[in-house]
Length: 117
Image (cartoon, rainbow, N blue to C red; front, side):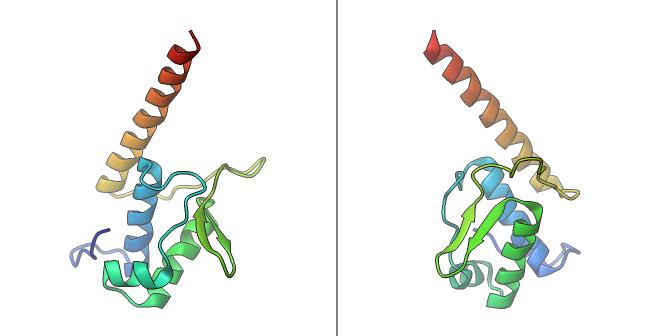
């Protein structure tokens, strides 16, 4: 993962959520993939477990993550019917990852179409 940026004005849980969001959108965590445990996130980011928990809860509110109590947190496979994933204003790095994720998605669609021919 990454570490907190002391120059980033966002709260630590928002920085962790932003890093996870970028990893999800870039395809590092595919739909249905299990995210690291809260303890693992806390250790890799150098934050408290409660900060990691707040970050995952934030992504759940955005519709990117599903929390299954006793099993862990998973990347949502698809938005619920009528649900749109909300993405707050992203930092520069997050916008880059979002753009990369969109390009990868489009390339995948093109590859599937070419494979059908």
